[in-house]
Image 1 (tube, rainbow, N blue to C red):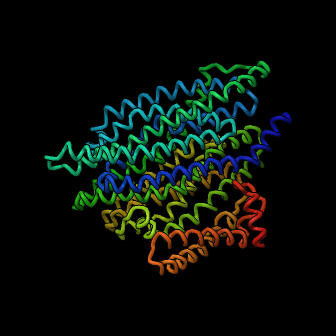
Image 2: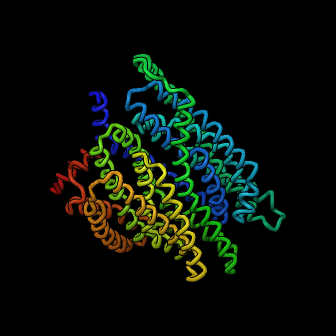
Image 3: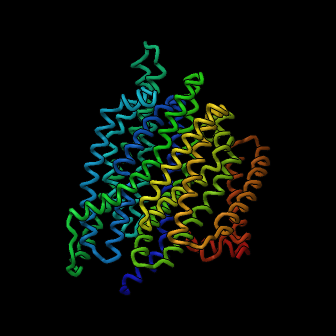
Amino acid sequence: MGNEQQNKLRKSDSSFLMQGSILAIASIVSRVIGLIYRIPLTNIIGKMGNDYYGTAYEIYNLLLIISSYSIPLAVSKVVAARMANQEHRNAFRVLKGALAFAAVSGGLAGLIVYFGADFLTGELLKTPYAAIALRVLAPTLFIVAIVGVLRGFFQGLGSMIPSAVSQIMEQIVNAIISVAAAYTLFSFGGRVAADRSDTAQVAAAYGAAGGTLGTTSGSVMALLVMLFIFLAFLPGFFRRMAREKMGTVSPYSGIMRTLVLTIVPVLLSTTIYNIVLIIDQGIFKNLAVLQGIPREQISSWWGVYTGEYRVIQNVPISIASAIGASAVPTLTMAFHAGKMDLVKRQLENATRFVMLVAIPSAVGLAVLARPIMLLLFRDPDPTSAMMMVVGGLTIVFVCLSTLSNSLLQGIDHLNLPIIHSLIATGVQALFLVVAMLVFHLGIYGLIMAYTVDALLISYLNHRSIMKYAAPRPLLKETYILPLAASAIMGLAVFLAYRLAMLSHSNLLATFFAVVVGAFVYFIAIIRLGAINEETLLRFPKGSLLVGLAKKMHLM
């Protein structure tokens, strides 16, 4: 192995967590923006509108997964393998081949969504009023496919910054347009159906379409940002291509074959993994109707589940997705170079990093479930808060399953996540049926079923990672100590909230409790030995955090 390649691997080892942190921060910022705009959006379109919006979005998300969701990871993996051997020309040919693939797959998916909206929403998911919102999303599938290729190309080169910048800009535009369009179209729908018996449903349907219009507008902004960055980057890349020694140029037929063989396993695993919500919705709504639960109640539950519970839950989960995306190129480079010690270290670091965030997030959201629901959505319904409590553990297992899927794909075991997701999907579907028909758990049975799905995938993936890469089982540092620190934090958060509620301000009490919780957790993870100076330095602003810890005499 040449010195240049060794230096590249050492650099990737030291930077992949930093790059992942950059993407994670961008994901968190995007999720927080998404969370913020969902507050006025929910107030405008209501729980019924949230049901229509959530139904349209889940169908769109499924078609997105099938058509292009796996493209960024697959492109980054194939590009990283070429760049490990300094094959700039072949990496660029991968980009062109991937763009052709994305144009076809994204275009077909958009046509299916547009012309099949009535069947998908009305016949399959018993939510016909969601068709308008779904049709608005049709062109987004094509745009996002192209954006995904460009993001994957830069991730394969080891840079998460273009993806991070485009994500934030996308979400800002999404937030502004979603709220403005929902307000305008909700009023318009009410006027259109003023003399009809379904005025509320039509108004909510148009309002939901306004929300999805924001998604489409955001994707256009993401494409513009990525094109700007790409065009600025291109001259330098062309110069590197010109300096490259002439070697074997991969034919496009071979590149497309490699892309397809990489995309299909990733596609199948992500499709199966994410199709769970569609399956859950079909099972849940049909069984709930069979049990005689009023349709208005079913719609309300599902609106809270998709528009409140999962929106909040997805904030910490986005960190696992970001770390996984950043780990794949570096893992691929190290794996193909035969550096198994580096592979093991990256597997360990990625899992520890994610658990340091996922476990306290789960505890904090469970403890502050009711205050958060009141603060963000003005939702005093005890059922809504209990969803967050029951689903707190889900966050940990979904983070683990999301990350471990990416880690297995990074070490070239692309088929295992497919098998594991198939097994888990069957088990959780059976669990949901039993939970509803035998134990009559209703919406809580749905949340528990999702937890079972993520738990089983996490276990099966972890077993495979141990078999094929054998990272050191750092159970204490990865799971036990963060859990202990989170328990201490949870108690502190509970007491801080109760104390601050003497002010009779839920906003002030929740903010105070979150600040106290972050401070206590920071102290606890250091004092308990869950994190050391070396690991902390890998975080964004790590030197600042280390300096703070030393001033507090924690290190």
